[in-house]
Every structure is written in structure tokens, then in C-alpha cells.
Length: 82
Image 1 (cartoon, one colour):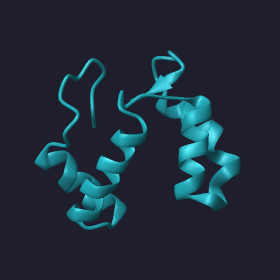
Image 2 (cartoon, rainbow, N blue to C red):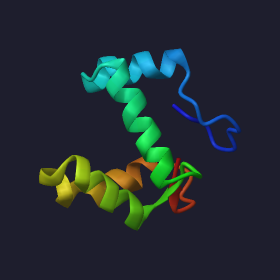
Image 3 (cartoon, helix red, strand yellow):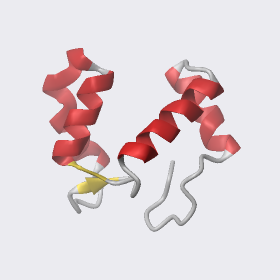
Image 4 (cartoon, rainbow, N blue to C red):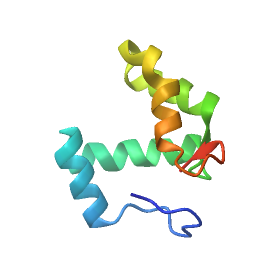
């Protein structure tokens, strides 16, 4: 997955393959999602509110668990995920 302080926001072929297999979307769908995401969040970073808002658009039935998910992903406790 993308690393902090990464200068290139493009998905690598390996990242795209990994996401495609695990999310069960085509590589074209993954690329379109990524393009849309970067259009909305050009820095690639989300604070907790933005993460919850964005995640619940994709998975509206998981709203209760999004804050917990954010806390698990934000492993360095800087208040953002990227």
C-alpha cells in the first residue's frame, strides 16, 4: 500500500493487482476509483472525519465500524491515513 511521504500517487501494477484480487474489482474499476479518490483528496490523506464520510459512501452498512477501522489503520496515531 502507499507509503507516507510517497511522491508518486499512481498505483503500481503490484498494488493494483493486490487491490483487484482482494476487493474483487477489475483493474479498470480500481484505477477509476483511485482517480476519483485523488480528485477528491489530492494529498491522498484523510483525517478521521473525511475517512468516515468517504468510507460510508462505499460501504453504507458499515457506518458503525468506520471509526474503529480508522483507528486500526492509523497505526502511527497521527490522525490521518494515506
